[in-house]
Figure (tube, each protein chain N blue to C red):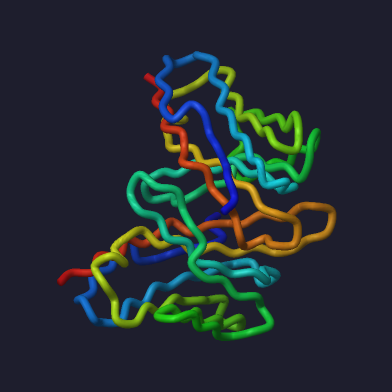
Length: 115
Length: 113
């Protein structure tokens, strides 16, 4: 089954508004959580990440909220700009022993910020 | 900035064909990954490796083989390509201890006719 899920395939936000992207996961052993951004015809790049020992991390206009009991994390983008228009991929993983470390991605949410 | 180079950028083959996708990273990263990207599925992990000669099975390995010949080079092999393998393939690498920070190549677009 899908271990990391983004239930909204798309989101449209007015310029200047707050974009809220959501991600749910199934494995309660996950301890690393990340958001990647992908423009068309480009590769994904890491936006922001958190580890399980915190429930919030801010970086400029970006904030990640982690709710471990609910197995949910979200990305908030304040003062959304048209250049924020992209595909946003959430990802989660765990640092297992023996080298078995992998990052599992969600299906992606297409964010459109309209002027 | 970490460098991950994939080749070819585009590839067209026929059903039953033999295809090798190449990935090279010059970051001295131990971990390398092969993902495929499909609409509605995001990125799905095919195979990965944490060093030369090592191979780990990902989440969608059927129909794919992989080989890590050196720390720099990771290959994805499709020995009997099928139309269901038409996809955009991404290679990524990361250093040990930074599981969330993957550096991706530009992708290989594969079409199986």
